[in-house]
Length: 316
Figure (tube, rainbow, N blue to C red):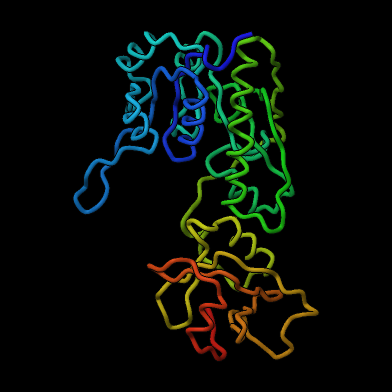
Protein backbone atom coordinates (compact mmCIF):
# COMPACT_ATOMS: atom_id res chain seq x y z
CA UNK A 1 0.00 0.00 0.00
CA UNK A 2 1.35 3.38 -0.99
CA UNK A 3 1.46 6.14 1.63
CA UNK A 4 1.56 9.93 1.42
CA UNK A 5 5.35 10.16 1.36
CA UNK A 6 5.32 8.01 -1.82
CA UNK A 7 3.23 10.60 -3.69
CA UNK A 8 4.61 13.39 -5.87
CA UNK A 9 2.29 16.40 -5.84
CA UNK A 10 1.81 19.55 -7.90
CA UNK A 11 0.00 22.15 -5.79
CA UNK A 12 -2.17 24.96 -7.19
CA UNK A 13 -3.25 27.59 -4.65
CA UNK A 14 -3.05 31.26 -3.71
CA UNK A 15 -4.56 32.57 -0.40
CA UNK A 16 -4.09 31.60 3.26
CA UNK A 17 -6.85 29.00 2.92
CA UNK A 18 -4.72 27.15 0.35
CA UNK A 19 -1.60 27.49 2.46
CA UNK A 20 -3.12 25.54 5.36
CA UNK A 21 -3.49 22.52 3.06
CA UNK A 22 -0.07 22.92 1.47
CA UNK A 23 1.62 23.03 4.89
CA UNK A 24 -0.33 19.97 6.03
CA UNK A 25 0.77 17.93 3.02
CA UNK A 26 4.36 19.10 3.44
CA UNK A 27 4.58 18.31 7.17
CA UNK A 28 2.98 14.90 6.58
CA UNK A 29 5.71 13.91 4.16
CA UNK A 30 4.19 14.45 0.73
CA UNK A 31 6.67 15.30 -2.03
CA UNK A 32 5.71 18.79 -3.21
CA UNK A 33 7.22 18.92 -6.69
CA UNK A 34 6.10 22.47 -7.47
CA UNK A 35 3.58 25.16 -6.56
CA UNK A 36 1.49 27.25 -8.95
CA UNK A 37 0.05 30.51 -7.61
CA UNK A 38 -1.39 33.79 -8.84
CA UNK A 39 1.23 36.30 -10.01
CA UNK A 40 2.54 38.89 -7.51
CA UNK A 41 0.37 41.98 -7.24
CA UNK A 42 1.46 45.54 -6.62
CA UNK A 43 0.03 46.98 -3.42
CA UNK A 44 0.63 49.64 -0.80
CA UNK A 45 1.87 53.20 -1.23
CA UNK A 46 5.11 52.12 -2.84
CA UNK A 47 3.28 49.75 -5.18
CA UNK A 48 5.66 46.98 -4.24
CA UNK A 49 5.02 43.51 -5.60
CA UNK A 50 3.39 41.31 -2.99
CA UNK A 51 3.67 37.55 -3.28
CA UNK A 52 0.65 35.40 -2.45
CA UNK A 53 0.74 33.56 0.92
CA UNK A 54 1.33 30.25 -0.88
CA UNK A 55 4.12 31.77 -2.99
CA UNK A 56 5.84 33.32 0.03
CA UNK A 57 5.85 30.09 2.02
CA UNK A 58 6.91 27.85 -0.87
CA UNK A 59 9.79 30.18 -1.66
CA UNK A 60 11.07 29.88 1.93
CA UNK A 61 10.94 26.09 1.62
CA UNK A 62 12.87 26.22 -1.69
CA UNK A 63 9.93 24.69 -3.53
CA UNK A 64 9.70 25.53 -7.21
CA UNK A 65 7.02 28.20 -7.86
CA UNK A 66 5.25 29.08 -11.11
CA UNK A 67 3.06 32.19 -11.50
CA UNK A 68 1.66 32.16 -15.05
CA UNK A 69 -0.63 34.99 -16.11
CA UNK A 70 -2.59 32.42 -18.09
CA UNK A 71 -2.86 28.64 -17.61
CA UNK A 72 -2.74 28.26 -21.39
CA UNK A 73 0.80 29.61 -21.53
CA UNK A 74 2.79 27.14 -23.68
CA UNK A 75 6.12 27.69 -21.90
CA UNK A 76 4.47 27.14 -18.52
CA UNK A 77 2.93 23.86 -19.69
CA UNK A 78 6.25 22.69 -21.11
CA UNK A 79 7.98 23.23 -17.75
CA UNK A 80 5.15 21.67 -15.73
CA UNK A 81 4.96 18.57 -17.93
CA UNK A 82 8.57 17.67 -17.05
CA UNK A 83 7.69 17.31 -13.34
CA UNK A 84 5.88 13.97 -13.78
CA UNK A 85 3.63 14.39 -10.72
CA UNK A 86 1.21 11.76 -9.44
CA UNK A 87 -1.55 14.15 -8.38
CA UNK A 88 -2.44 17.80 -8.84
CA UNK A 89 -4.02 19.33 -5.72
CA UNK A 90 -6.02 22.50 -6.42
CA UNK A 91 -7.15 24.70 -3.50
CA UNK A 92 -8.55 28.19 -4.20
CA UNK A 93 -6.04 28.76 -6.99
CA UNK A 94 -8.08 31.45 -8.74
CA UNK A 95 -8.01 30.09 -12.29
CA UNK A 96 -9.72 27.17 -14.03
CA UNK A 97 -7.19 24.59 -15.19
CA UNK A 98 -7.03 23.61 -18.85
CA UNK A 99 -7.84 20.05 -19.89
CA UNK A 100 -4.15 19.47 -20.66
CA UNK A 101 -3.15 20.47 -17.12
CA UNK A 102 -5.97 18.42 -15.58
CA UNK A 103 -4.86 15.30 -17.42
CA UNK A 104 -1.13 15.78 -16.78
CA UNK A 105 -0.71 13.80 -13.49
CA UNK A 106 -0.19 10.05 -13.41
CA UNK A 107 -3.42 9.68 -11.41
CA UNK A 108 -5.81 12.63 -11.01
CA UNK A 109 -6.21 16.35 -10.48
CA UNK A 110 -8.28 16.93 -7.34
CA UNK A 111 -9.83 19.95 -5.65
CA UNK A 112 -10.85 20.76 -2.06
CA UNK A 113 -14.13 22.66 -1.95
CA UNK A 114 -15.74 24.21 1.13
CA UNK A 115 -19.32 23.03 0.68
CA UNK A 116 -21.41 19.91 0.10
CA UNK A 117 -21.44 19.86 -3.67
CA UNK A 118 -23.40 20.44 -5.84
CA UNK A 119 -24.66 23.11 -3.39
CA UNK A 120 -22.61 26.30 -3.44
CA UNK A 121 -20.20 25.88 -6.30
CA UNK A 122 -18.07 28.98 -6.80
CA UNK A 123 -16.19 31.66 -4.91
CA UNK A 124 -17.90 32.17 -1.54
CA UNK A 125 -19.48 28.90 -0.35
CA UNK A 126 -19.10 29.47 3.41
CA UNK A 127 -20.61 32.96 3.31
CA UNK A 128 -23.51 31.85 1.10
CA UNK A 129 -24.31 28.84 3.28
CA UNK A 130 -24.63 31.04 6.37
CA UNK A 131 -26.52 33.84 4.58
CA UNK A 132 -29.02 31.26 3.32
CA UNK A 133 -29.49 29.86 6.83
CA UNK A 134 -28.37 26.38 5.73
CA UNK A 135 -28.51 23.88 8.58
CA UNK A 136 -25.46 21.96 7.40
CA UNK A 137 -22.41 22.32 5.19
CA UNK A 138 -19.15 20.45 4.71
CA UNK A 139 -16.08 19.88 2.62
CA UNK A 140 -15.53 17.81 -0.52
CA UNK A 141 -12.62 16.23 -2.32
CA UNK A 142 -13.53 16.13 -6.00
CA UNK A 143 -11.99 15.43 -9.38
CA UNK A 144 -11.16 18.62 -11.23
CA UNK A 145 -13.13 19.17 -14.44
CA UNK A 146 -13.00 22.07 -16.88
CA UNK A 147 -16.36 23.34 -15.59
CA UNK A 148 -16.27 25.21 -12.26
CA UNK A 149 -16.61 22.83 -9.25
CA UNK A 150 -18.61 20.36 -11.35
CA UNK A 151 -16.39 17.26 -11.11
CA UNK A 152 -17.46 14.07 -9.35
CA UNK A 153 -16.98 13.87 -5.59
CA UNK A 154 -14.49 11.37 -4.17
CA UNK A 155 -14.87 12.04 -0.42
CA UNK A 156 -17.00 14.39 1.66
CA UNK A 157 -17.58 15.31 5.27
CA UNK A 158 -20.74 17.10 6.44
CA UNK A 159 -21.35 18.93 9.70
CA UNK A 160 -24.05 21.12 11.24
CA UNK A 161 -24.11 24.91 11.06
CA UNK A 162 -25.07 25.88 14.59
CA UNK A 163 -26.90 29.08 15.51
CA UNK A 164 -23.71 30.55 17.03
CA UNK A 165 -21.45 29.66 14.08
CA UNK A 166 -19.97 32.45 11.99
CA UNK A 167 -17.62 32.56 9.02
CA UNK A 168 -14.56 32.02 11.21
CA UNK A 169 -15.88 28.96 13.05
CA UNK A 170 -17.09 27.28 9.83
CA UNK A 171 -13.78 28.12 8.11
CA UNK A 172 -11.90 26.43 10.95
CA UNK A 173 -14.10 23.34 10.74
CA UNK A 174 -13.49 23.15 6.99
CA UNK A 175 -9.74 23.17 7.66
CA UNK A 176 -10.02 20.64 10.48
CA UNK A 177 -11.99 18.10 8.45
CA UNK A 178 -10.64 19.03 5.03
CA UNK A 179 -6.96 18.39 5.75
CA UNK A 180 -7.63 14.86 6.97
CA UNK A 181 -10.00 14.25 4.06
CA UNK A 182 -7.36 15.42 1.57
CA UNK A 183 -4.73 13.08 3.01
CA UNK A 184 -7.14 10.14 2.91
CA UNK A 185 -8.27 11.02 -0.61
CA UNK A 186 -4.72 11.07 -1.99
CA UNK A 187 -3.89 7.73 -0.38
CA UNK A 188 -7.13 6.17 -1.69
CA UNK A 189 -6.48 7.45 -5.21
CA UNK A 190 -2.92 6.14 -5.54
CA UNK A 191 -4.08 2.77 -4.14
CA UNK A 192 -7.09 2.69 -6.50
CA UNK A 193 -9.44 2.47 -3.53
CA UNK A 194 -12.02 5.10 -4.46
CA UNK A 195 -15.17 5.74 -6.48
CA UNK A 196 -16.88 8.75 -8.00
CA UNK A 197 -20.18 10.28 -6.88
CA UNK A 198 -21.35 12.34 -9.83
CA UNK A 199 -23.06 15.66 -9.15
CA UNK A 200 -26.65 16.47 -10.07
CA UNK A 201 -26.76 19.56 -12.27
CA UNK A 202 -30.40 20.10 -11.27
CA UNK A 203 -29.37 20.55 -7.61
CA UNK A 204 -26.42 22.85 -8.33
CA UNK A 205 -26.33 26.33 -6.81
CA UNK A 206 -23.68 29.02 -7.14
CA UNK A 207 -21.91 30.97 -4.41
CA UNK A 208 -21.39 34.25 -6.22
CA UNK A 209 -18.41 36.40 -5.34
CA UNK A 210 -19.14 38.81 -2.51
CA UNK A 211 -19.98 42.42 -3.37
CA UNK A 212 -19.03 45.24 -0.99
CA UNK A 213 -22.62 46.48 -0.99
CA UNK A 214 -23.65 43.29 0.84
CA UNK A 215 -21.66 44.19 3.95
CA UNK A 216 -23.83 47.16 4.92
CA UNK A 217 -26.54 46.42 7.49
CA UNK A 218 -30.05 47.47 6.43
CA UNK A 219 -31.96 47.92 9.69
CA UNK A 220 -35.38 47.79 8.01
CA UNK A 221 -34.77 44.07 7.42
CA UNK A 222 -35.86 41.35 9.82
CA UNK A 223 -33.53 40.85 12.83
CA UNK A 224 -32.99 37.22 11.85
CA UNK A 225 -31.81 38.20 8.34
CA UNK A 226 -29.49 40.89 9.71
CA UNK A 227 -28.04 38.39 12.18
CA UNK A 228 -27.26 35.96 9.35
CA UNK A 229 -25.33 38.77 7.63
CA UNK A 230 -23.42 39.55 10.83
CA UNK A 231 -22.47 35.88 11.25
CA UNK A 232 -21.57 35.39 7.58
CA UNK A 233 -19.14 38.33 7.56
CA UNK A 234 -17.63 37.93 11.04
CA UNK A 235 -14.85 38.62 11.79
CA UNK A 236 -13.88 39.74 8.28
CA UNK A 237 -14.81 41.80 6.33
CA UNK A 238 -17.47 42.60 8.96
CA UNK A 239 -21.08 43.69 8.51
CA UNK A 240 -21.10 47.44 9.13
CA UNK A 241 -23.33 50.36 9.98
CA UNK A 242 -22.95 53.94 11.22
CA UNK A 243 -24.57 56.15 13.78
CA UNK A 244 -26.95 58.72 12.36
CA UNK A 245 -25.15 61.91 11.32
CA UNK A 246 -21.79 60.10 11.31
CA UNK A 247 -19.73 58.73 8.44
CA UNK A 248 -17.58 56.60 10.73
CA UNK A 249 -18.30 52.91 10.28
CA UNK A 250 -18.88 50.46 13.10
CA UNK A 251 -18.67 46.75 12.40
CA UNK A 252 -21.06 44.45 14.21
CA UNK A 253 -19.26 41.14 14.80
CA UNK A 254 -21.70 39.37 17.10
CA UNK A 255 -25.36 39.80 18.01
CA UNK A 256 -28.35 37.80 19.18
CA UNK A 257 -32.01 37.96 18.28
CA UNK A 258 -34.40 39.22 20.95
CA UNK A 259 -37.76 37.43 20.96
CA UNK A 260 -40.84 39.62 20.77
CA UNK A 261 -41.80 38.69 24.34
CA UNK A 262 -38.45 40.04 25.59
CA UNK A 263 -38.39 43.11 23.36
CA UNK A 264 -38.45 46.58 24.94
CA UNK A 265 -42.04 47.75 25.51
CA UNK A 266 -41.24 51.39 24.76
CA UNK A 267 -41.91 52.57 21.20
CA UNK A 268 -38.76 52.63 19.05
CA UNK A 269 -38.16 53.48 15.40
CA UNK A 270 -36.08 51.27 13.09
CA UNK A 271 -32.39 51.73 13.88
CA UNK A 272 -32.96 53.09 17.39
CA UNK A 273 -30.62 51.77 20.07
CA UNK A 274 -31.62 51.17 23.67
CA UNK A 275 -29.37 51.88 26.66
CA UNK A 276 -28.27 48.24 26.79
CA UNK A 277 -27.56 48.25 23.04
CA UNK A 278 -30.60 46.51 21.63
CA UNK A 279 -31.37 47.75 18.10
CA UNK A 280 -34.84 47.97 16.61
CA UNK A 281 -34.98 46.17 13.26
CA UNK A 282 -37.74 45.95 10.67
CA UNK A 283 -38.99 43.06 12.77
CA UNK A 284 -37.80 42.31 16.31
CA UNK A 285 -34.66 43.57 18.04
CA UNK A 286 -31.00 42.57 17.88
CA UNK A 287 -28.85 42.70 21.00
CA UNK A 288 -25.37 43.77 19.89
CA UNK A 289 -22.58 41.91 21.69
CA UNK A 290 -19.27 42.61 19.91
CA UNK A 291 -18.44 45.70 17.84
CA UNK A 292 -15.37 47.12 16.11
CA UNK A 293 -14.83 50.82 15.56
CA UNK A 294 -12.75 51.95 12.57
CA UNK A 295 -9.05 51.45 13.20
CA UNK A 296 -9.71 49.73 16.54
CA UNK A 297 -9.74 46.15 17.82
CA UNK A 298 -13.01 44.25 18.39
CA UNK A 299 -14.65 45.15 21.70
CA UNK A 300 -17.41 43.67 23.85
CA UNK A 301 -20.36 46.04 23.97
CA UNK A 302 -20.24 46.03 27.78
CA UNK A 303 -16.74 47.51 27.58
CA UNK A 304 -17.94 50.08 25.06
CA UNK A 305 -20.83 51.07 27.34
CA UNK A 306 -18.45 51.55 30.25
CA UNK A 307 -16.59 54.23 28.30
CA UNK A 308 -19.52 55.83 26.48
CA UNK A 309 -22.60 57.32 28.11
CA UNK A 310 -25.57 56.24 26.05
CA UNK A 311 -29.02 57.66 25.86
CA UNK A 312 -31.37 56.79 23.04
CA UNK A 313 -29.63 57.17 19.69
CA UNK A 314 -29.79 55.44 16.32
CA UNK A 315 -27.99 53.69 13.53
CA UNK A 316 -28.65 54.98 10.04
